[in-house]
Length: 366
Image (tube, rainbow, N blue to C red; front, side):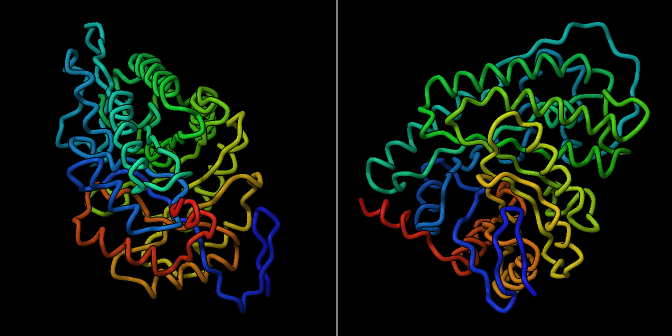
């Protein structure tokens, strides 16, 4: 039996495929950006193509910190305790108060982090050739998770404009050859898999309208990323309490969205990240990977590495390689709600199941 990837590569199932690249989704429990940069560089030599800042401080819980952006319009906010609980809210009559936004902060954090990144690169801690990765939520994630349904349609274009302005500032300061942008997409998967909890403010009569709305919005975001800047996206089933908001039957929805998003991007997509639950070592979960239709430059990262589970991770790699060859590995989601001992464990797993890229190791020694 042989396995053929979306890129056309072929390998015998008798050979154990060993990934070379590791992708870091974003968030972490580390106290400072520098601490995160140092820890990741030491733990994963020769394996990283991009390096995020760990989303330290109040950014660790995905978009919850973005509630501060709407502090001048508190009447539009969901309760703080509900962010990440995926609770459905029945729309009410909207109040007439004008919605105002404060600074969203993604640009400020990125530029401050990039300065630390450069300082560590100059010292030889961060390898030359590794790009600085900026993780941004799509507006759907902020508007859908933070705001009451009756205000979402009005607030979305305001937030999208603010996010686009922040992205423009980031790209104006950080050289394109140093920069990578990741779009974090959890609410989109929720809209498709669990519409009772992830309400849409732009759907018509069917699921197709929701999907089309997602694709149209992503096309605008992707179009705002400059040529020469690496760009990818992270599809997600959530990580609140280390639990998914919905357990997928297989990777069908993820594969379909990866194909659709890539074809609607209007520019090159450099990577796609998708999660793999710890208990899924069965062929049925991975089989949809054979339907991936991505361009040759697009790396696929499977979030199949789990803490204290080296052998299980190896098994997931083995089964996945029956349907897709030449993929990188990652965790299911970020480290933001993870204890440091668990982070240490999963970093060890990632290092154990991968082989470093020789040219990356050489760049580290320069």
